[in-house]
Length: 272
Length: 272
Image 1 (spheres, rainbow over the protein chains, first blue to last red):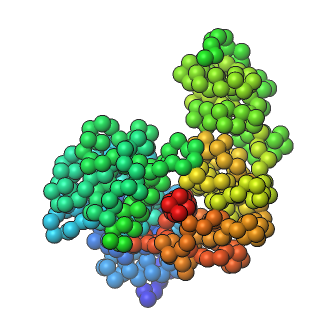
Image 2 (image 1 turned 90 degrees about the vertical axis):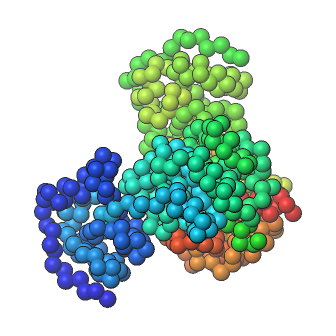
Image 3 (image 1 turned 120 degrees about the vertical axis):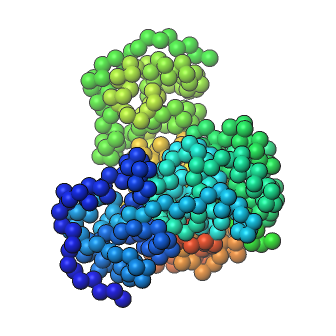
């Protein structure tokens, strides 16, 4: 176990470096620098363990370093340097870090990677024009839990490196490839070429979820939280699938619907 | 269809009545007055349609009254008076109303009602010490969608009439009975007396969700979003059930887990 020396190396909350990290809450700064914020012990733990190659710097308070020794251990094993910071510095960099913060670089996962022949993806989730950070992050988490091979976000979706999205993934952003800015029509065609069926989830769908053949390799397409899927997107799919609503609720929200669909696929694929 | 006269009857955002409605964002005011806020067209529509006996007043802007004539129609049919307000008045009463607001009285649903012999409840969801408004509201919505007979919240849970909870239910608060401040031990015993099995959902459970006999009438117990279920609560259950995690995610969040469990029960009960 790495020993935390307890020597604070960053103590000035007004230092340029501190301001530079804090500025990563802005999309324009993230885009220009090719970096994003990873906030909180859970997300940073998963980043240094599962995707250390993406991590540029780790910042901890002394208290957090003592409380989460595995973070320093994994960072050290990966050859990363951890900066011990005063509590003031951590708070100046992020209000949501709970003493633990990392700066990481986006991975370069692409739709082509996820649909490469040698990857043999069996379960993929695509999001069309999803705007709410919590919804997008939760779908990434659901896809991870369901054992999906990756997630794809269409052009026009929320920035997956927005701090709220990163937090909502609860570390799953570092567990499976997430391709951004994809063209859904191209993705649907490529998926079909690889033997995946394309299922669009929509409350107005004509196929009942429990009647669909979910044992087959599947690309799920989920729509915008407020407007659902457009006609063009529904036409990309082999079937438009409806989750049955047994009570009086009008619908499920996007994250709930995606969780039900992805878990139904996982169950059917693993039973088959 | 009721005609909206277009005559604004409330135009002073500093009127006592307006301040009185706005004060319902505070738990102490809700408790003292026995009233709560219903914000936005979806929630108000469901309230006046499915639970008009709980609605005390409906407030709309002229634009909202024209856009959602069904709200005025249903309110009129139910003998409710709708107040046409200036946009200033609506915003002074609530920032989240989108032009449509109601003040309602909590229903008096109790655990005894939900477990009465003549109700023959087959699917119930109980929440233990749930604190996050969005989670609590989303579980009520999931229970509604899955066709559950009711929801029970333990003492120590978030106030289900908190505006954020009401919004998160997306109208489902008015679709099925929600009993609050219940004693979970009593509820579990009463449920078992009525022939329901008691299943606790927990990431550390010993029974796989897909191995459980979900066709039986079931009371599900879900724990706090951060700490899960305590030992005492797990011991109330006939089985502690784990949703399988196929990828590297540590867990699902409470709302996702409850949605998967309740939908799995609904599916098994309706197939059987």
